[in-house]
Length: 142
Image 1 (cartoon, rainbow, N blue to C red):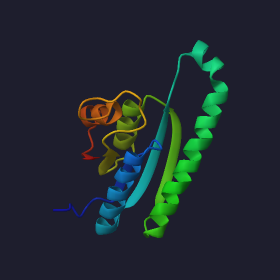
Image 2: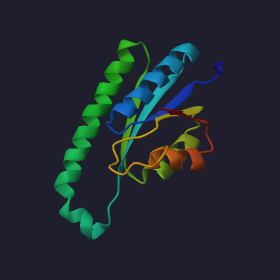
Image 3: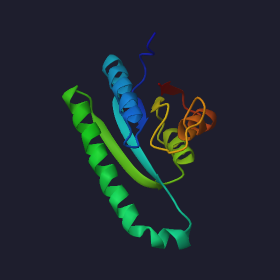
Image 4: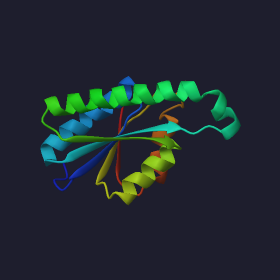
């Protein structure tokens, strides 16, 4: 049964196929509830001394993130759903959980695994962190 009072849905995205699967489910729910979607893309922060050496890589990552968010916005628009996006640096599971709580989202829809090279047994590390830290209900999409 779909809770009809979902009005704001947060979708963490990272450029992976699983995050697009999460977006598809979020779009479906948004259509059922007349909700809006917000996509959030959090790029990890590295220590300052290490950060200086990978600055060009971070610039490329930010461009790829913007490109992916535009793709997500286009997919949502084709299905008649309003989509806004946020791209930032930080700790993904903590920042996503805090953002959802602070902005009073009704639901977080996240893919079970993202772009991380290290795979956990059942859930990706970010999805697992959000499930355990979030005060907002979380739907994990496999």
